[in-house]
Image 1 (cartoon, rainbow, N blue to C red):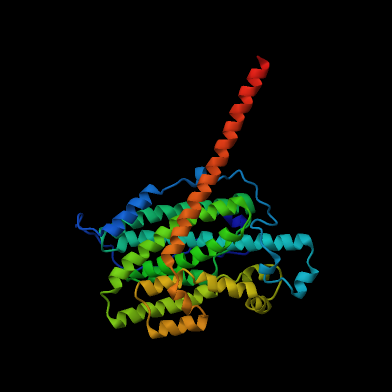
Image 2: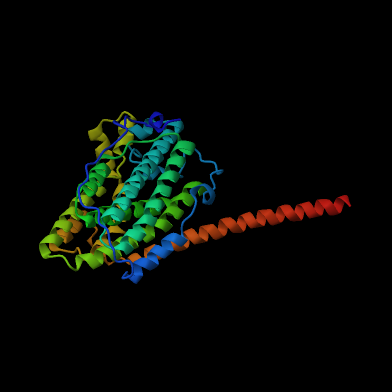
Length: 369
C-alpha cells in the first residue's frame, strides 16, 4: 500500500522542494586530518548494521497500545472528552499518538539524511566529509526502519509537523556550511535523542524498544561529530557571527519546544484547534516532557561555545538553563551501553533457545534408540 493512502490527514504535495544555496567544497588535502574525527569515522564504519536483520520484525505490536502509553501522558486524560470515550476510543487515541510520534521521527530522519548529504558537499575539511558520508547511511537506515514500523505495524502515518518543517527549511536554505551542523546535529538530533530516550526507557514493548535503542546508538555518534566540528570552527568566529548563530538556536529551540505537542492528533479526533492547544498546554506530562527534550540540546550548545546573554535569557524563559551543566558524555555513553546490553540479552536468549532445541532432539533420539 502506498504511504499516501495511510496518512491520517492530507499531507499536501507529496514532494517538498527546498531551494538551497551555498557552494560545494572540495579538499585536495588528503593527509592532514583531525584524529578525533577520523576515529569517529572509523567507529561509524564499524557500527554499520542492517535494519532488516538486527531488528526482530516478527514481534507483534498491539495497534491499540503500541508503546504501552500510560493514560496520564495523553493530553485528553482528565477532560470531558476522556470521560465520554470508550475503551476502544482510548485505544484509537493511543494508536494515533504513537503514529504521530513515529511519523515525526520518520520525517526528521529523512531531513537528517538530506542534511548529512549537504555536509558531505559543503564541509571544507575531508575528515568531516568522511564522517558525514557514514552518517548519511545511518539516517537512511533510520528512515527505512521507522517507515517500516509505520507501514507494517501501525498502518497510519501523519504529515510532517509545521514547526519541524520550518526548522528543516531554515537549515537547508542557509548557505553557510556550519548551519547544517547546527540545525541538524545539535537542534533536531539533540531533541530527537531526548524524545527517543523517553520512550525507550518507559515502554515495555520489545519492538519499539529495539528500534529506539539501536537508533540512539547511532545518534550518539552524530551529536559527538557536530560538537567536535562546531567547537573547533566557532573558536574562529567574531562576536557578531556567534550572535547570528545564537539567534538561529533561539528561534529553533522555540520551534522545537512547540513541535511535540500532538495537536494534530486531537484535531483528527474532532477537537477544535484552540481547545486542543489548551489541553496540550495544560498537560503536566507535556511540561515534564519539554524539559527532558532539552536535556541533550542545552549542554551541547554550551559546549560548542554559543552561550551569550540573550541565549541564556531564552533558556531561562524556557526553564532549561540549568541543563547546561548536564554531563552530555555520560548520556551518550549510556546510549551506547543500553544498545549493546540489549543485543547481549537478545542473542543470549536466542542461543539458549537453540541449545534447548538441540538438547530436546538429542533426548528424543536417545529415547528412540
